[in-house]
Length: 458
Ligand SMILES: *Cc1c(COP(=O)(O)O)cnc(C)c1O
Image 1 (cartoon, rainbow, N blue to C red):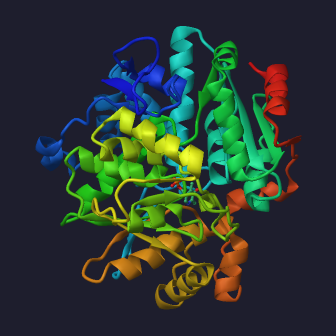
Image 2: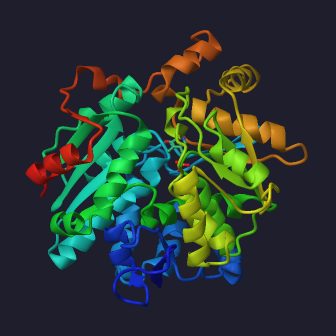
Image 3: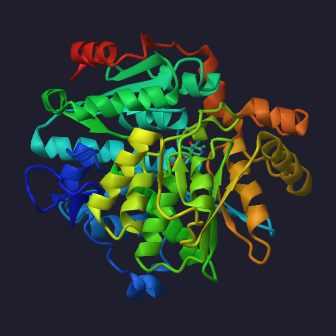
C-alpha cells in the first residue's frame, strides 16, 4: 500500500511512499496529510471478522495497510500495545439501553489517545531499530495527546519527544500526566500561548524542510496516519459487534477520531451514520450545517481536548469529499488561510451521513448529571458532549457513543455536575501528586522552540 498527500505530491517522487516512511514522515513534504492511495474493501471478510477479538481485528487491519512491516512483527507490536490496557476486552462496550458506550479509556493515560499511541511508540522503535535511524518527535497537545504520546515513547531507543502545550490551559492533572514522566528522552514545553499557537509552531517546524531533515522530525499528532489506522480498529470492532449498522456519536476537536470512522466506512463496513459533536468551538458543526468553514475565536471549555478551531485532520475528509482532487483541496485551504473562511457549497448543509451538533457548557453538565442519575454511570465532559449530541440526533436508534476519557481525569466538571457524588478516584492519577515534575516554559515563538530542540535533539 502506498501513501499519497492530500496536496498532491509526497516528495520528489511521483508515486506514493510506503507505510513505514509515511509513519516516520508524519506530514507530507508539501504540507498535506498522508492517505492510502485506496481503501481496501473488506465486505467479503465481514462474516469472518465478526468473531475476532479487538486485538486480532486490529492485527488484520494493520496487515492491509502496513505491508512493509513483517506481519509477525506487526502482530507482536499490536498485541504488546494492547496488553498495556487494564481491561481484558481492551475497548469494552457498556450498554445503557438508550445508548452504548465504547470505552476507549482503559490505557495508561486514560483517554482514547492511548489506543493509537501505545501502538505508534512501539512501531517507531521497531522501524528505527530496523533502519538504524533516529527520530525527534514534535507535537502540540491540548491535553490528552501529550500524555498519551509521552507514555507511548518514554524510554524507547533512538527517540526523543518534544511536547508543546498551552501553559496554564490544560488541566492540572493532564499537565502532571506529562511532566511527571522524567525519562531523559521526554521534553515537556509549556508555551505561553493557545493550543493553536502551539500547533502553528509545530507546523512551521515541519515546514522548514532543512530543519526537519537535520533533526529527523516525526509527528505523533493525529496527522500521523498510523494513529488513524489504530483508531479504525475500534470502529470496525464495534460495528461488527453490532446486530445492525450502528450510528457512532463522536466528540470532535481535530477531526481525528471521527475520520477513523469515516475511513472504516470507506472500506465497506456497514455504518448507519455519524453524529459529530463539538463543544462551543463549533467550526466543524457550523461547516456541516452550512457548508462554510469559518474560523472563530478559541473558547476555553470544560472539555479542553476539543478547544480547537483549526482541525488538522479535516483536510483528509476534504480530500475525499472533493473526489481526491488535490488542486481543489489547495484552493479551499488557500481561501481559508487568506480570508479565515472557505466554502464547499453555497450555504448548503453537507450531509455525507454526518449529523453535526454543537453542545454548550450547560448542556454538557446537564448530560453528566442526567446520565449519572438515570444510569449511575459517570461521563467525562468530552464523552458527555457526544452523548448530548447523540440524544438530540438519534430518535429512532440506540447509538454507540465514544467514551473518550475516564471521568477521573476531569474531576472539577464531574463534581460540579453531580454535587461531588460522581467523583471517582483512579489509582493511576492518585500517584501523580507526589511525583517529581520536569518542564520548560517557552514563549510562543518558533525561534525559541527551534533553539530548544536544536540543543536537546537525539
Ligand atoms: C483528543 C480528544 C478529543 C478530540 O479528538 P480528535 O481526534 O481531536 O477529534 C476528544 N475527547 C478527548 C478526551 C480527547 O482526548
